[in-house]
Length: 320
Ligand SMILES: NC(=O)C1=CN([C@@H]2O[C@H](COP(=O)(O)OP(=O)(O)OC[C@H]3O[C@@H](n4cnc5c(N)ncnc54)[C@H](O)[C@@H]3O)[C@@H](O)[C@H]2O)C=CC1
Ligand SMILES: O=C([O-])CC(=O)C(=O)O
Image (cartoon, rainbow, N blue to C red):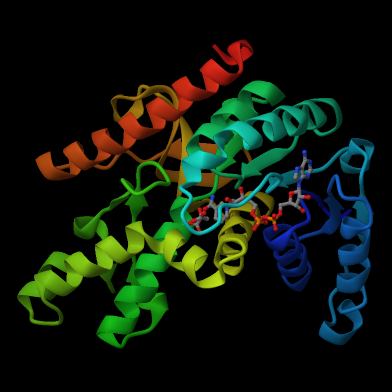
């Protein structure tokens, strides 16, 4: 069977890490695309030269022309700019919306059958715009955020409980901003909800609240430490999990920004919810039930995403 083709639009910090991980996991051949000539070619060659050491087979190339992504099975988009300390993700909207238009047109022309994973911020609005610009079906265009936000929460929990990260599950839903919704009731250690673990004395409500808050601000914590950009190892690992579920038809249940058509009472927008990713893209949306507090948090988060979409329509009336 021929190898799958993975196109990475944006060959910066996340793009380079994605390229390396895709090789290590032997997901397919990789083409890195960037507007800065030399960078995708240089990273492609560097990673290809690591393959004999690590023992993986994958062809790597770099491109500055969209023809290079022709026929890609998966496209992962990180093109654009990251934030710096003092900025919010929303401050990136003007510049990154223009980038989404160029990328969407490139995908429409050269890789219309691909499964597309958007990472560029502000995530929920950018994936919405990318789907519009590309014209691809909504089940083939998703955004990466929930896997990352949930992984951060899982890391904090495993650290607090001194247990393996493998035994900690978490669901962080809603938009990828400070109003995201870490669902304590649906997060567990080996199936036991966190709410029960507080009762069992494994942690205190105060510590749990602090971990929830740290998760919400997790991106900003890294931005303030790095000072020149934002997180890239965990974001890349998260998108690779989504790509792998599609390419290997694993049907994993992952929290992702998905197009909602009435589910969760939301219509025509992308918001983070648990979805099944298989060979057909988004195969199912899992609608969990909320209690009153969770519902209020989710609606607040959806309201923030709605505001960003309205802002996109204001900047580019073609999206209205
Ligand atoms: N959804 C999420 O959970 C996360 C999202 N992000 C976002 O991902 C994006 C990328 O982050 P990094 O890789 O760290 O940034 P980076 O600056 O290292 O890489 C971005 C790359 O995009 C390229 N680029 C810019 N305009 C382009 C265009 N029109 N076409 C093709 N390439 C273009 C740049 O030349 C650069 O190489 C940022 O917007 C960041 O905020 C970052 C972390 C997590
Ligand atoms: O915080 C940022 O700007 C990058 C991001 O989305 C994250 O790491 O969650």
